[in-house]
Every structure is written in C-alpha cells, then in structure tokens.
Length: 553
Picture 1 (cartoon, rainbow, N blue to C red):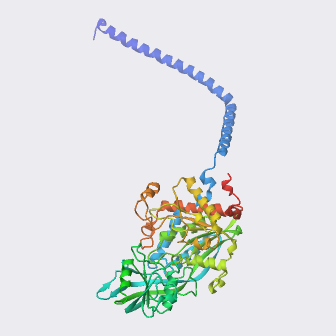
Picture 2: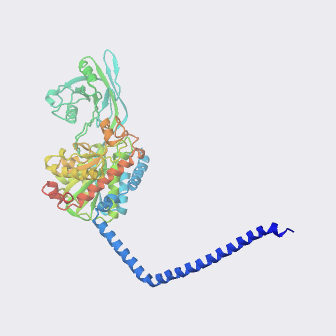
Picture 3: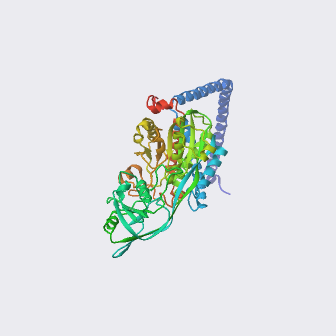
C-alpha cells in the first residue's frame, strides 16, 4: 500500500471535489424551491385574474371582427361579386357540348350541315333545354335549297387546239349553279356586259353565254334571264383584279320556298380565260360537264322562349347551329351555339330572373345563306307564312324584339377578339347597335383584354335584324383572314397566318378550338346577355334617350 505523503494530495483533491458538488446540489434545490414559490404566486395571481383577462380578450376579438366587416364593406366589390353571371359560366361545360357536336359529326359524314348532322345537333340542344333549361322550346320549320358537287366538273375549249381548263385555277362552278349537265361541242356567244336586259343579250338559245357581271343586276338575275332565253350554260368572266375564279352564290339572296333556282350550269372563269373565250366565239366550241344537284329540303330553327321578364323588350340571343358540308364546324359555329346553350343553362341553374325577356335561337341553314334567321325575320316582320310555321308558331312578335345578339365563331385558334361595329348598322338600328358595342367594350376594358372593332355589314345572322330596324351586335374571333404583324404584337399568335386555318374545312374539329379564346368570348357573351336583359328602360337606352344605369355609377 502507499505511504500517507504520497497519497495525501490525491485524497484531499478528491474529497474537495465531492464536497464542492454537494454544495452546488444544495444550492440548486434551494433555488428550485424559491422558483416554485415565486411561480405559485404567479399562478395564484393568474387564477385570481383569469376571468377578467378572458373577458378582455373576448372584447378585443369582437371589436376586431366588427372592424374587419366594416373595412370589408367599404372596399369595392370583386368581379365575382359584381358580375356573378359571368363568373358562373363554366368553360368546361361548353367544351363538353362541343365534344357532343364532334361525336354527332363523326356519325354524319364528318359534318353537321343541313343534310348531315344538323338535326342531331338540334336534338341534343333541345334535350338539354328540356332537361335543364327554363324556357318553352319551339321548332320553326322552313325549306332550304342544298347544293352539292358530286364530282369534279370539266370545261374544255375546242378550236384550232384543245384546251382543258383546270378546275379551281382556271374555272369554278359557282354555288347553286344548276343541276348536273353534259354539254358537248356547244357554240359560244359573247353577251359581254349586256346580261341584264333580255333585248340586249342577243341569240343565246342552245349556246354557252359568256358574260361579265354588271352592277345593274345580280349574277342570279343575269344567269336566270339567260336561262329563260334558252342558254345551255352561263360563263361569268371575272375582273382582272381577281386572280382566281368566283364561287359566289347564283341564287336569290333572301331565298324562300317557291323562289326559282338555276337549272343550267353556271361557271366562273379568270379574266385571262374569259378574254380567250371572247376571241374564239366564232371559231371554237366548248364542252361542259358538271355533276351537281340542288335539293330543296325541310330544316328548322330551335327557338327557346324565356318564361320571365318583360316580353315587350325581348333580348334575342342567336347563333347558327349548322356547319358546312365539308367539315364538322366545331369552331364555326359549334363554339357560338355551345356557348349560348350553356349561357341559357347557367342562367337557369342560378335562378336568374331578367327584367327583359330572353329568347335564344339556334339558326338552321346559316351556311346556305342565313336562311334560318331570314325565315324568322320574314315570318315575324312581314307576316310571311308557310304550312310548317302555322303548325308550330313561335310565341314572339317582331315588335317585341328590342335587340339581337349574335355569336358566330368564338374560339379561332389564332384569334383576335373582335366586336361588331355598331356604326355600320342602318340608321334606324344604329343608336342601339352602338350601345351594344359599348357593352362589349366595357367587358374587355374591365378585364384589360385586347380587342378590335370589326365591320357589321354581312356574313352572319345579325343581318336580317339590322336590315329590318332591330339593333344588333356581337363578338367573334375571325375566320380565314390573315393576322398582320401589328396584330400579332397586339394580340399574340402567328403573323401572316389565318385566324382560323381550318375555316370551312374538315379539320375544324375539337382540336381546332382555342380554349382561352372560348373562355374570354363566352364570358363576354354572358356579360352582354345578363347586362342587357336586366337593363331597365331598355328601349329608351337603345334609342339614346337615356344613359344605361351601369354607366351612371
């Protein structure tokens, strides 16, 4: 074992450490006791004051909530609060209608034209209105001539040398240009610009008449007169400023049941071809072969008459339901007709009660010359009747219609947001049409969307209304016209490309729909429909005698 001198220091140090630790522990215990004694005092204080404190916090909470409501009530309403109808419209529902139209076209030769899928499209619209709408549905029937090219026509010149002209480049068969015919070795006769007066036309019997269009008569009046004089075919020579032959309609513009139609072929040729024909009238013959047909068929409009609102200030909302025969027409005009369908269903779903009655119309045979809307206007404005209208009358009088809103092509892929120019309307309808334009502009300005004003002269179903004194307007996104570089900077998209590459073509399918355009334009339509149908003193506002309430804010 070790000696005391060697082990003492180690032992002393160890003992000192142990004694020091014991003192620290005693101090900790003492401090803890003091803490809990002090904490017990705090707890006792809290217990004695907690009831008052909770009351104080409750008062602060109530004051805070009240102040929040006060501040919120002084803030401007959000768009969703101020424009609930616009925000209630769901673009996905519109797209679902378009998918149905696509399915219908696929079952009917990839088309929703009068003789293809139009009737099935109308049945779908009617079924939706009957199941979910709030209107009385009428079918307004009328007759429509449908012209079909069954095979490529041929046109040849036989003289010192034979010339076979190229269809689409050198010549065209004009729309509604007669039934099919096979004409061999027919003599040419130059009528020139004398195709409006029978006494000046010369001897055209059994011959192919070569004529220039005149401002003194329409192409139909000229061609029909020459047919009555015995011509076997008519060839219109186009002006030199046009590089391609014409495909214009050779038919009475406002055609109705009982009006005449062409039976002989009517062609159009370029200016250069026409000059050669004029020079060869005494030394050459022509062969003409066409395989076309004109069938007069029964079709119809779908009219949805609202059950509430002032009928003497009716707001008419129209869109054409048919497509061209060449394609399914999902943009032209599935986009417009699906949008107006969903607008009607949405307003019904949210219980909208307009001040002015709403009437929705899905026109038939628009692509055949606005025949559905023209029939509606003719029946109501001029008292014209046929046997189908008498059987299924529409509960609307012409004098009840305060205005017409037209929606045709709302989702072009390379779109520009376009608003019809109310100044283009005839004088009797101009003030109201300008007001409608202003309502649409209000929507685009509020959302800070780019837009342009476009003409309202022809080409869609507003025409029979403005021509008969009813104010009209609408929005659209463009067809085959090209987008300029300036337009591209303003509206995006592709410059030097059509607004709708698939316009009147078989590719106008659901893939041709610009969803963003559909959203903007359908909501613009909803805003106009809900604003104008709920506008008090609508007639006075349309006449310009009264400023609309929403502009008086």
